[in-house]
Every structure is written in structure tokens, then in C-alpha cells.
Image (cartoon, rainbow, N blue to C red; front, side):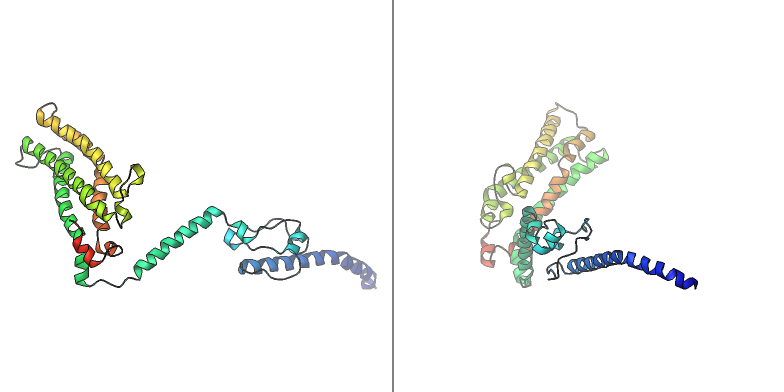
Length: 280
């Protein structure tokens, strides 16, 4: 008897909940469709338009994962959805194109066959010669730098000899760079952008490094010359300040230049016969 009295109320409650259940069912279908689109960003299901009960907040996705909605779906939601092409900015597309070109160049280099020992010797000739010159510059720099940081000259070296060593180092480095820029780099620049001349930032990095190095050399040369003439006293702490401003760029340049002239880079631009005729 008690159950029969409650039965009409249960039926009425169930009928009252039916619209809400239908709404939740529509939402479940909408979210299922969204998951399919997210999992397959390059294809849009040809399903009926999403129900108007679709949530207004969109999931956060990257532009390349976005998928264009059909016009009927856009009309159903009341919002214009961007297409895949419109969602990718032009700047990003340009950057991707540049990256692809770089990757293609790298892949092209990786496809080159290994060099034989004889071929490597031919292609690495300029790097080996350059490294011999650079070894001398490193040795001279280390002598001056050890004195500057240690607070005293090398044992058995007089102030006059020490100053002469420093000025000779600067003179040889200047001559070395002049020969490179007048006789070697212009020939290499015919095929290699790494040696391209120009003004300011228009020049290749190796030549810009030359400018930075010589700015530091000028200060050191003026100080050593003043010490040699007696206009200034030789103080190791002052010597250190005159050297440390261009220490990094000098050592970076010495390594960078040799690597650029190395066999694996030179083979991209020159034949073995051309390598034998290059000046060094």
C-alpha cells in the first residue's frame, strides 16, 4: 500500500529529470566529438552540428593542433571558428621555412661520404697551418697573462724584455690579421660567407672579431709603449685590465677560425684541386 502511494511521485520525478538527462547526453556526445578532433587534428569528423549546449570555453591547444570546424557547426555554436591556415601566424610560417632550409643543408652535409686520410689532409691543410700561427699567439698571450694575474714577471726576464715581448706579440698579430684580410679572406669569400667583408654588422663574424680584438690591442699597445718610454710604470694589475676586456673574443676567434678552415667545412665549398691552390 505504501509503495503504491509513492509510485505516482516517483513517475513524476522521473519525467521531470528526462530533459536534464537528455542535456547531459548531448554534452557527452559533444565532448566525445572534441576528443576525436583533438586526437586527429588533420581531419574533422563529418558529424552533425554540435548541440547548442556545447560549453563556451574552448580547450587550450597549439595553433598547429587546431582543426577547422564545418560551417554548420560554427553556425550551431554561434561562433566563427578559425581555420588551420588562419591559425598559423605568418611569422611562424617564415621561421619554419628557415628552419627547414637549415635542416636540409645539414642533411645534405651529413650525406657526404667519409673522407679518406689523403683527402682529409688536403682539406685540412689550411686549418693546420693556421693553428700553428695561433699556437704562437696563445703562447705569447699566456706569458703576459700569467704575469698580469700572478703579479710578477717570468723568472729571469727583465722589464725591458717583458715589454718587448708584449709589443712583439701585438705587432705579429696585427701583421697576421692584415695578411688574412688582404690576401686570404677575399679568396675564401668567393665561395664562403664565413669570410665575407663588409661594414659593421655586414661583415662576417670572423672579421667582426678582428675589429673587437684590435680595439683591445690598441689599449694594450698604448700602455706598453708608455711603460717602455718611461711615461708610465709597469704595474701588473693595470696590465691585467688592459688584457681582460678582449681575452674572450681573442680565444674564441682563434678556435673559431681554425674550425671554419677545417676539412669538414672546407669540403662543402672546394674541390681537392682548388684546395691545393688556395693561399696560405
